[in-house]
Length: 300
Image (cartoon, rainbow, N blue to C red; front, side):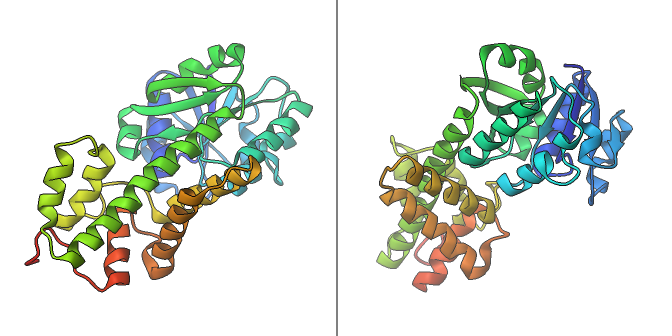
């Protein structure tokens, strides 16, 4: 595991991951199709840019960090994808938030070509990506995990080997469901509190002193001071992840009353035009829906 290929190095998460992989001494090749400005520092640090995804197939491992399953499927199995020229023994590591069903299909297809497929999605934000302090969940056999662990640790503070291939994407969706449930509940509570005429700063103080408090709650609380970008995660992507979660619950035949509500809250915010904003803009959506001014005091 010396020569690492990377798809998605121009993205917010991918850039920091690729930077740290290179900084830890790995040879790095990146495929960039549109936005080349964000990767200039990687090229200056010795990374090599290739023309297409298939040009990465000669690497020891290829990491993919893109939006979701359709993009991953195109990189792996689409025209000019990795499998069109993959050699036996190549390891493909999907760090995106992907659908478990798609992951299993791609893994089976890769196995037919002698290629090993690993799901290794991420937690935390682009800030931690740049600092090399992401959390990574890895689904792989113990033997494969031992081979790829040094690469994963190049950009991760915490690495969790959560089971065999496919298990990591399930755990990632569960993680994101809980996260978005906290965010949507907080936004709704702010709307109800504002409409009831209470001081929302006092609500924040009460929650901050008790067991309901969390890092996500604190990021959402910053909206009361007008900061809607504290959580670096687009509403479009949050809605996509909850759609994947809904598909997961259907596949295992578990009723998803809360998950469906969270998904619809995210969809509503997107429909109101906040999709390209960060998740804390759920508060803006609640303010618009309820025709209320959500600020830190009743006088705001």
